[in-house]
Length: 353
Length: 116
Image 1 (cartoon, one colour):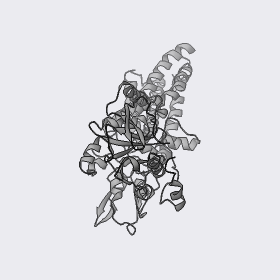
Image 2 (tube, chains in turn green, cyan):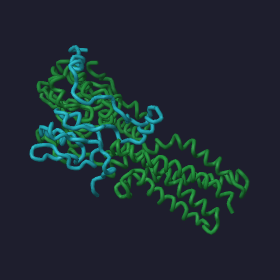
Image 3 (cartoon, rainbow over the protein chains, first blue to last red):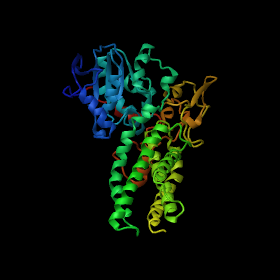
Image 4 (cartoon, each protein chain N blue to C red):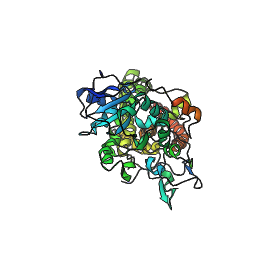
């Protein structure tokens, strides 16, 4: 333990302290930092994007400057420092194994024990003369603040939720306005999550897409390969449409889609996409093949979309575990049934007159 | 646009007014408008806004609050049902016991040597 390595790419220099040279960082991100943000948003190396835990200096802090506590996910660390231009503070990075503050607090790694251990191992009492650390509010599920002072000698104060409110919080003498304590889920907060939702759907898609071509070949209208090409391509378009509905449209239009359950919201997004998909094909509903085919996609696209939307609960900022379990008890069997029944109808439609 | 609210009447949050001392830490840690202070004591204002993160229960110094906490994440529920740990989901469904007050043994364990 002790001090973090000063040779990490984002460290500019060191600040001399009684405990040795503390790595110094700035509030501006360089190209590599921005590239790292981009990659993490697309899920590339996201689980291994870390900074070394321990004490860092932002700007030129001294023995009287505040200490902010954060997680060792580099995206978190970079967000924090980027929000603090013109500020001199100490940043105490806990070892959360590269997980953001809120999730790590839920796991308990951004926890009472780790904070106390890190205060001791960083010898914080020798670096600063005051006895206070400022926590991100969302570390509340992991840290019992009232226990920190008796365990470490430092008083733990809950700061605001977002790093961008820290300056105001400090200016007001460590007081947060009520709105700083409320977690939002705004359009931009939802949109930024879309890439990782899509990346998550990529792996199963690599299995599903070839399968759609194979199943597309079945039928007695043309030869197997002609069928596979014609119906396979349409099926892949429909499948991509269901990804669009569940992983793009649902996050964007979340507040306006009907229902409270995420799978219901995803169902409606899927129905819209399915309707568009069928309307542009001008299908003859006078024959059974057309009816089966239409019904198949009215089941398949909303079914897949509802499932993807349901998975977006994990990225949302307001869903409870009790609620998710309740939703899943009815949604998962219905989604499964819709997909199986839809696939069967899709194949049958090619044998129907 | 109003505040997003999840399912109604599912949340496990409980407040024991007998134990509450009105310190207000629950209002401070709660990321949603769940609590209010009523005559110097905490009260539940909007139970359906609770996401069961457990911050209030963990930070309540008198154990007046209880909630069966966890992460509302469908992928984590699926992973836990399938008995696997996902690499793309940071959630865990049942977190390790961290609730309540640390015992004396924990206290001793946390007293690490000065320069380890």
